[in-house]
Image (tube, rainbow, N blue to C red):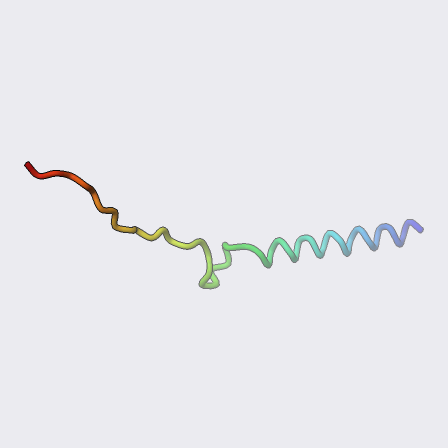
Length: 48
């Protein structure tokens, strides 16, 4: 019974590590965080 629990724990831990490694943005795979986009804003200033 202890062998089954240990095997389940090892498989779960390996799966968690693989899942976290696959979702990483630090792999330089062309993805990563998106750069902010500058949007022009109109101002209603009066010239007088």
